[in-house]
Image (cartoon, rainbow, N blue to C red; front, side, top):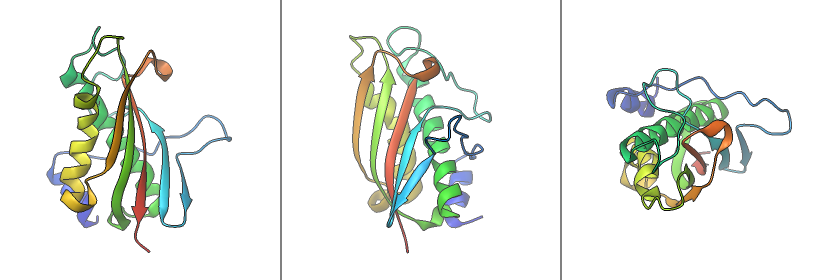
Length: 157
């Protein structure tokens, strides 16, 4: 176990199995040079007691959405680890794009996606973990999941 995974464990988190994609026309991530472009990941983590499905502003609280975003971040990390071989190879979290399944009047998309941003910031530190980000509301997400997050990561040579 590398330093980043040890830090993750000290934070009380584990990684789920990397997501399997049902169609061969897409994959969990694509590497271009030292950049890893990660597909959208939902809050699928069997080891966490969270609410994966629902609509923020209707049947989910900001706190439940925050936890769902944390689970999405962990699913992303599982994909990054599978592609890079070791999370210690992550040089920087470059950008996250967070989508929140929400009612039209829900105002707190950034507070929900902070679940992922806070996790990456704490895990990788203020330089490598600080990233560009968008947090937007959606009328719906696949399988009724509460959040979906994609992003880009820079890897060390």
